[in-house]
Structure formats: structure tokens, C-alpha cells
Length: 84
Image (cartoon, rainbow, N blue to C red; front, side, top):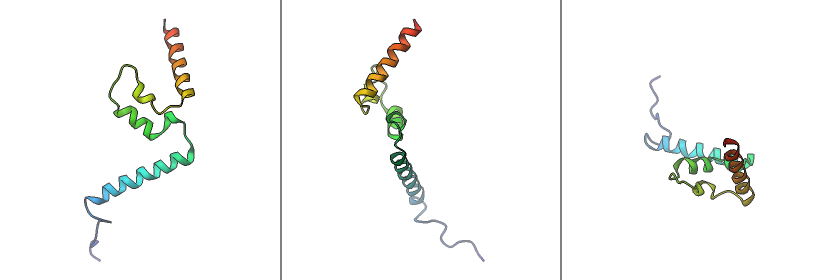
């Protein structure tokens, strides 16, 4: 038997793009089914990674609920008080 006649599923360029799309879609569905916390989703981590660096960090906190934002502010205040 000789080598495979068609070594690619779609094409040489489209196969990696298709693979990345399928992997990202599968992970997104996993996150929705698993009901992860807001701070531990792929979207949040990507937003945090690619957001421009800002002093007040409001760009990353935009997707949080009011309760989560208040908890984060309280934790930051407690950390600052303990560092003094």
C-alpha cells in the first residue's frame, strides 16, 4: 500500500483553523455546562490578558456582578490594610 492520497481533512491551511475552532467551541460548551465562576472563564481570562493596562482595573471588572465587584473591593481593602 502506498501513502495516503489525501493527507488533509479539508486542506493544508483550513485544517489547523478548523481544529482551533472545534477546540474553542468544545471548551466554551464545557464552561457553560460546568457553570464556572465569572473569574474563571476563558472569556474573563482572555479579557484580562489582552486588556490594556489600566490603573483602576475597571476593564477587567466590567463583566462582574455588583456582589462580586463589592467582594473584590473588600478583599483589596483588607489586603492593603494588612500590608501596612
